[in-house]
Length: 358
Ligand code: GDD
Ligand code: MG
Image (cartoon, rainbow, N blue to C red; front, side, top):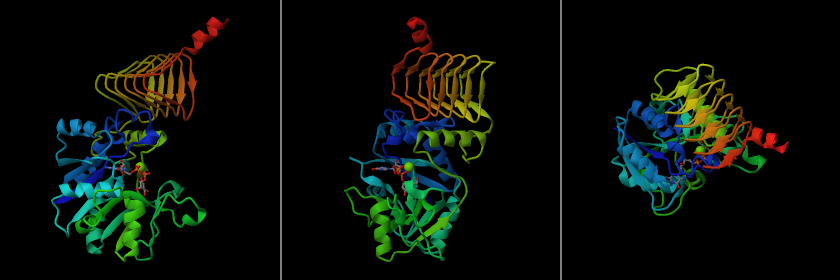
């Protein structure tokens, strides 16, 4: 039996306004809450019990887990206040059944990857490591935890989001999945905020613990930003990213009750949510349209996220935009990369403004 802790308590600040009502791991990606992709991958790798480590909007997870059967035992741990990644792991440990020598998997709750979970646990146990980290090479590592290793795969340092050039010592980053020997978790200080990246890992290294790194250059994506979020959804729909939660792959995914007009063009791995609609001559390309949203005639929506019940007006063009739940974009608007429309906001018709001007 293998247990895992899934860290899902972060605020998802970079995905605001979508995360105002819904925590990041519960946002729909390729038709199901993102967390389901991770839970099913863990289940299929032999994990039999998961502790969901929640904080922000814990009730949204609770309600979902109580109403679903994912074929794996799920226990919810909710911190009284956010304890950081290390504090959260320590807090969740009270819910683990594992013995001191057992291997426990830890997952960041916003990473989509094809990592060989069983292989990681095997490496950890064969090498008799205290902790084993899954590492992946990225072009620009500055936004992540940098993890250099020696020729034996032993981690030599842990540099979380270095701000100086001297900190850029490797392209291999912490890919957000670890194996801990259970008694190492029990030594994390209890009841206070601890960052596993800034405190626990550097301390383990300083005290001579055996921390191993396994580099895997397969599919990896942190869904922390809007563009990464749509990319993850797109990659799942197209079949570029692995998940047991996606049955068949194709150019687009239309959920139950979605309406797509014959003359509309929905492609590029887009998802059209439940009871959402795409009207005539509209184009939806590599976008995520949440449930009950409406893309009106002739609108173009690319690389964007359209919140639940939101409306994109006739002929409007959106590229790289996040539209909050129930917001309304009037006709004829052009919104470009980086624009975020708050839930319920209304942007008027551009065409009507022009015509009334004169
Ligand atoms: N329960 C709980 N409590 N969970 C938390 C808390 C907390 O106080 N703080 C963060 N988390 C969860 C988040 O929900 C997320 O799933 C995970 O911990 C990591 O937090 P992020 O906020 O997503 O961190 P990051 O993306 O900036 O950096 C982390 O991930 C990178 C890889 O994606 C670090 O682990 C980096 O070292 C790593 O490279
Ligand atoms: Mg992250």
